[in-house]
Image 1: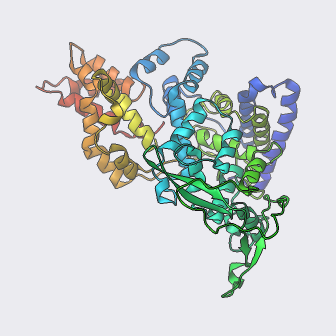
Image 2: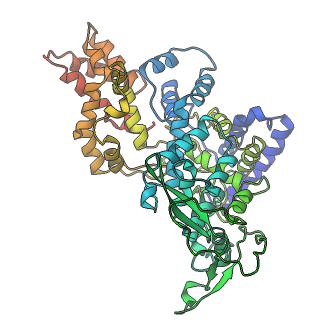
Image 3: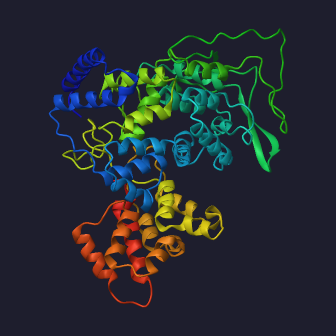
Length: 545
């Protein structure tokens, strides 16, 4: 990163730019993608940076499919786009993908990883089909983010009929763990360093941390019986119970009881609570087997209401920064969950402008994503002068490994496995090679937003080279069968292979080598199968390039 003086120069340039954009009418709703480009270009000019050129159609096509719907395009979709001469074909494709059912499915996968991580702390939260379906519903209906974020924190109903409750259930009523997660995800603030002492770097005291934890001090997870043949859990909230503050960890003594800490909004006011009736009593624990009664006054609901309020300075900045990181590889503030005053944005005025636009559009995530991916900044090529894996000034597109979901779904699309199963009247989900997803998840791991570091492993190498499940997909799919049937020249097969697997046409050298290989006379389809396998397991397929 450049020194502070250079970053300050960029900040000043951005402030001047905002004024000029407003005067020029760039701050209009329809021009947010242009506002993004103007801010980014201003930083390039200040930093004397030469950006990458715009991505070619094939590179853009593969990237936008993976980012929006989590799969590579089909052969037909690839040919249609590459052969089109429409000037606005990229914008039209973006609109079509945002309206596709696969968009909701993919975004649900992304947000499931963000909200639950790979291994939720509560074991029975690791199987959560209702939670994933609930997320998918939010994106299918384009429910505004402030609405469904509030529902996650309120956690009403049971985990089977109200999937959103699983977010809080995963913490099993542990107030401090819940506070860390909620402030990180919805406010972009890291408070865990104030758990045992005042924050060493930020202006957060230990009491600030316990004040946020107090909102969750009365929560209990209750088993409420069976629903749809599944164990149902619910979040109950008692009327009594407090977080006890005993001071810095180093000063604690055996038997020290501590003092109750009032629920307090982060760096804000103490929550005002109505007084309970004199001599009010309630059981220490909710009975299992039935839904817990609602409290007379809900602390967590008041926190949920405060978090999504329009005047909350954290919420809108946090979601804009997270979405930017999802599609651009790093946040305007990075790391993405550390919107600290001591961790300034790379483009502060752009972050402020986008946060205000998000508020003006009532937290419409689909609108924001559309504007972002329509920008030239997003559509840059991935090859440029910067050698950094996460370029600070966004001078080229980031390269990231495909997630487990993306890899498996792309394997299925490319090989034609799903098409073959449907043609045979079978459900592709039920006909997948045994335990392939769980095996791949253990092998490849999971990336939640495209911003994590990547390190290839021996297990990954062994899977790609030896896994029978991958071979089974190839042999069962339509691609191998279609190219094996009829009189198709080797040149046609090679072009079809590259368009199907890598979403591009082969280079002259690639064409020459593959044609020579496929022209060898054999009695079976093994050369064709090997050619498919070679492209499926190459590094170009493994990454979004």
